[in-house]
Amino acid sequence: SPSPRSTRLPLVVRAWRAAAMAGLPSHHVRFDVESLDYDIDASTLFERKVHERSAFLRRYNKILRWIICMAVGCTTGLVAFTLDVLGSKLLALKFALSARAMAPTSGDVASAWFRAFFTHTVLSLALVAVAAILVIWVAPIAGGSGIPEVKAYLQGIKVPGMLRTGVLLAKVVGVLCSVTGGLVVGKEGPMIHTGAIIAAGISQGSSKTCRLRTMWLKTFRNDHDKRDFVSAGAAAGVAAAFGAPIGGVLFAMEEAASYWSQSLTWRTFFCAICSTVTLNLLLSAAEQHFGELSHPGLITFGSFLGQSHSGAYQLQELP
Image 1 (cartoon, rainbow, N blue to C red):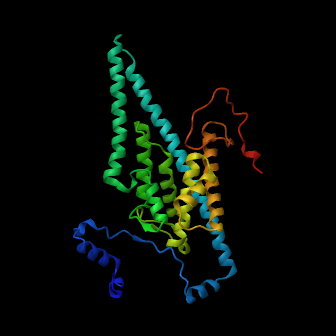
Image 2: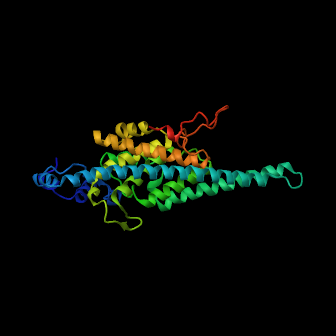
Image 3: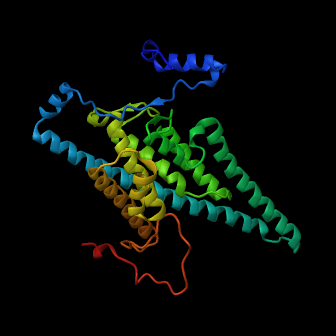
């Protein structure tokens, strides 16, 4: 058992000593992975400082939390719309180039089919190569769906670089290239990680990748508030992916977060609704049926026979 003196040593020194005692090389120990300080300071001085705040300042912070959640939801819906539209455009371009290569020039059908197959294969490999380069050399943390990393963060583990803006760009471009390249992957899982990164960036008003640090939102630059906004961002990602705001809240509540409260439930639900509504409005505008609220998110099974736009829910039907 560790002595009282050893527990007062820094975490890095204790990790190095533990690795040395276990016979592990020091380069196998990740010193940048630490726990997050989610506990609120319960000291007398902190409680006194909180009670000394004016009623206007406390009300202002509450309203600001709702505004940030709305911004996170709308931005997540905008990113989901961009992924959907650009993915459709890239797929259409890839198949158009393959169809152009398949056009027979001298009546040789076999060579036309070979040219089309070769063109389709080369384009798919090029798109997949872009995604692989981003994951291998630019942002390795962007590989996969990102759900395990988000769950680890919400459980109190500081994963290095998980919420950086560069990871967001690599994630979005990588998912776009992977899906259009023909890999057996989807846009739904990575949207959770995308929503979490968006929430972390907007709520803190800063970005280490862009070397940007504003003077606003200083109040929320702590692990406790950042965790709450990341929970809302993850729920917004689920809502944008599946068109299910309640499902997003349940995912964040039951699967991801280790801390929850009633006020966080309502803010997370509001954030998920903003994400779903933003995506629906943008998709309806792109399809020239602005105001329809019947889009199920990024996941779709296509149009059914006899389906028309007359039976879809409209924006003016909202109370």
